[in-house]
Structure formats: C-alpha cells, structure tokens
Length: 400
Image (cartoon, rainbow, N blue to C red; front, side, top):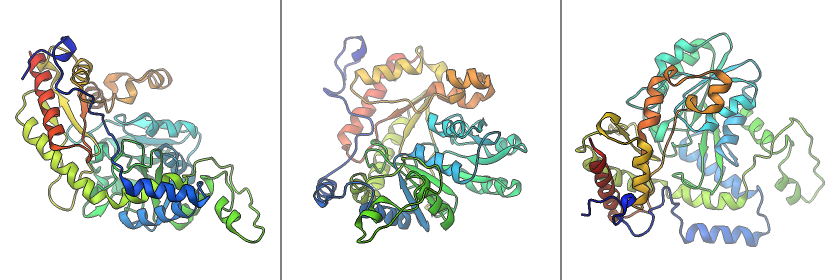
C-alpha cells in the first residue's frame, strides 16, 4: 500500500470519487416515474396517497402526511402545536440547522441542551433542567439513526405537559424497544433527501397518532386549502376550496412519491446491507487507535438505522485537525463528510443568542472531531475495503 497521501502528491486509494450517500435506484423506480408522467397527473395525487398509507403501515402509525422536506415537516409540527413568539423549544445543538431554524421561523426560541458524548443524542437529564414556564416542546434528534432515550423524554414531557416532536431525519428503519421510529404517537418527522436511507430526491413525512393533527397538517401543507387539488380536478362536479389557514407550499408530488413507494419496499434489504457493511467497518476501526464510534444496540428490540456511520477522533492523538483529515480522505477519492459542527458555534446562533462553544462542551467537542464515512446499499464490499484502507492510510500518516 502506498503510504504517501494523495493530498501530498501520492496515488489515491481509488481512481474516482466514492460519493457519500449516493442513492440506490433501479428499474422499479424508473418505471414508476414513467407511469406517473404518462398518467397526466404529476402533482400531489393518488401515488402520494399510496405512499402515505404504505409508509404509515411500515412504521406502525395511524397517519402519515407527505411533505416536500423534513424541514417542512418540522415546521408544520410546530405550527399544529401552536408554538409561536415567546415559546421555547428544547433541542440539541448537534444537528443540522433546520432542527433549530424552524423554531425561529415561528418566533420561538430554540433552547439547546448538551448531548450524551457516547450516544451523541440529547441528554434527558439536562432536558429536565432546561424547562421553564415558556417551554412548549422537546425536539430530540435520533442522531445518525440511533434512537434517543424516548422513555425518559416521554416521562419528562408528561410531567410538564410538553409536546415531543421527533426529528427522525436519519431514522427511517430505526426501532426503539420493539417499536419502529414513527410509531410512538408523537409527531415524528422524516427526511427523504437524496442521500437518505429512503429517497424521493427531496421530500419528507410526518407521522402522528392524532387524526385531527393529521388533517391540520394536510391543510397547512397546501396553502391552507380545505381540499387537495387532485381531488378537485378529478371530480366530475364543482368542488370549491375554502382557505382555512394561512398555509404553505409544502406538498409532495406524485413524481417524488413514485420513487418513495419502491424505496420503501426495499428498506428491509437496504438496512440489512448497511448493517453488514457497518460490521466490516466495526471490525476494522475498533482496532484503530485514536478513534471511537457511535454505539449500536444489538438486542433485537432496538435498531440503529445506520444513515450515518461516524468516527470520532481523539484529537490529541493527531497532529492535524479533523478538517484536514477529511480533506485528505477526499483526496484519496473517499467521499467523507461532516455531520455536524455544533449549531451553537455557528455565527448566527452566537450573534443572536450569545452562545459560546463552552456552553455545550460535549456537542462542541464532538462537532470538531466527528466525520462520516460512505455507507450505502449501493456500495460493494470492495468499496468498503477501499474506505478502510484510506482511513488507515490517512490516520496513520497524521498520528502523533
């Protein structure tokens, strides 16, 4: 194996980039999209309804409402909980910006609490300490696909009369105490972005056990109109719509749902493949000094969705920072990525709320030492071996 790093002029491990999160699509999705195009109905319609029904059944929820992104899902979850100016929403700083941004869109204040440094999920003990009379909801993130401690969060929410809105952007296929994430009865928000376990190119879903909430979500997602467009235009009689809420343009189209229907059917196979490749990574990296990984349950009742496979550096063992290590992996044509730099270290949150890195030290440290490796069902075992080779090559070169 060549020891000179590609970033320093050596030969890369691969000749072309192994893309992070490349979608896995085949003829089933292509044929469904063509069928939708030929049908003459490409907006929100019967295929979106079918996708909603099948997704609800998959996660064990009475209701599922399709939207155009997880951001839209999170925003509407706050809307139907009537969260607005002056309210507080407790969440984690170790997440994508949308998780906290949606609270600001509603005029509410995102209140961060630190993470458990082992699981990378929100720390329930700290959640309880952060509750004030203005707190209206807890918004946990199932980081990487590892379910949060929902039992503890449900107890806290019940004692204080708070809503729980689950950010399950990473968690399609995850399971908590024998129950699929999405089937808890809470408002649970999923992402179907291009690199997610289930993709519709762009898209999202909200699941809920509350029929009234589901109806509100469906109205808010399409301009606040009382009837969906496809129901009006497919009818042989005049059907007028009333504007019930000042809604948004958050609907999912049948073109997107055409992908989702078949991606959903493939989830069991996809997750088994992710787990097989993750075990190969585990075997290699558990013996590698200077890194640790997020734990995964193996008791049968709990399941990590493995949207992200992350490694966390012991930064003192390396002579360069995490960003340099990721740059070196990219030069080896391995599509490594960053998930995430903690939100309270970003300029907007520091300027608006006067946060400093030390306010949430676990999230800040993880945010400077974490990186993500490619893990998709479209990879081969040879690709997995290339990732392992590149990680060993780069970390060996930079180790103190």
